[in-house]
Image (cartoon, rainbow, N blue to C red; front, side, top):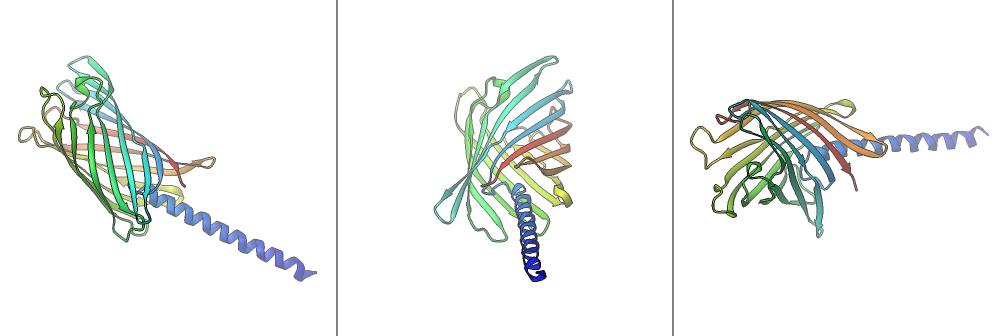
Amino acid sequence: MIKKTVLPILLLIVFGLTNVHAQEDQKVDLEKAIQNPIAALYTLPFQNNTHFGVGPYNRTQNVTNVQPVIPVGLGKNVNMIVRTIIPLISQPVGETDMKYGLGDIALSIFFTPKKPGKLIWGVGPAIGLPTLTDESLGSGKWTAGPAIILLIQPKGWTLGMVMQNTWSFAGPSDRPDVNLFYTQPFITKNLPKGWYINSGPIITSNWTAEKGEQWLVPMGIGAGKLFRIGKLPINAQLGYYNFVIAPENGPEWELRAQINFLFPK
């Protein structure tokens, strides 16, 4: 009688431990995936960037980016990661006016190995679409150029960088040409219970601007947490960045808030 009782109990314990380990592995895999911009993971991030001290009247600009990410398998060895940024902008104009609307949509397509090594990488084109609804909300030009992303994920960490440069090749002749460099170095340290701290400053250089007015360089830090509502994983984060280099009428500091809905396969 004892043997007949013990066996099911042992099986339940083994199954329970296996299930716990599987859940922990899934959590670790998801934590690594949310820190990897080119992971094969459907995501829908909403990122809000509030810039303070903009322009000669020290006003506030707000940019809400809707940033869907769609992975597409290309055969057995390659993934295509399609990243889109749809900016909804509140732009100060002059001392009191504001312009609201859609800016230029940015599209990045990265081709990356399905089974990367320790160095995770992706390359592809970056494309800008002139979708602005007001001339103050974007360049109004078609742009394109190369993009690359490199990252590593040692235990509990993610370190990497995105870089691209785009040039205008079509659009209204009365709008200025575009020659824009963009890079985002990023570092994340995962903490217990889904928490993490990170830094991901977005650094740009407008090569067509006058010397001393080209670079926009923030420095700062953020924190976030991976959690679930029901079965839906959600990644939320908040960050503060101070602009250590900026054009004369550039922002002084930035508050960044993001919520990211994840759809694992």
